[in-house]
Length: 141
View (cartoon, rainbow, N blue to C red):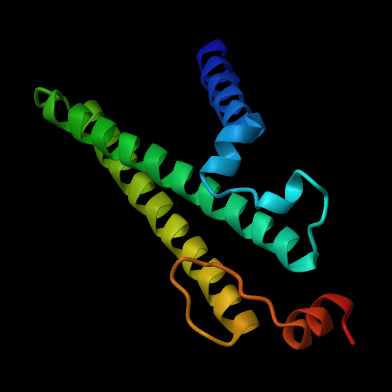
């Protein structure tokens, strides 16, 4: 891995870590439930935190994909007829479209999981717990 890629990767990791480690901001954004402060979280709320983190990561990957689409279009527009730059721009756009499709598919998997567990369709992926539904799934009984 060259130095530029390492720097970019490190910046992204630091950004995501700061975003996730900032307790008050993540709780205000709805990532963490209010039960975290007093430690009274149950199984349902812990599963909801995992779902929220997954949706946050999907959103970040979607934003990065959008930036790459813009970058690929910029490379195509500034290619000046150079076949190498046109090919590079096309590859960036194709890979960005694949990344966007993966992000949308992951979001659909999360919302489908929540709809199966709660027995109702929920686009916000908010888990409404029923002890009779979630407990048997987690404990395999």
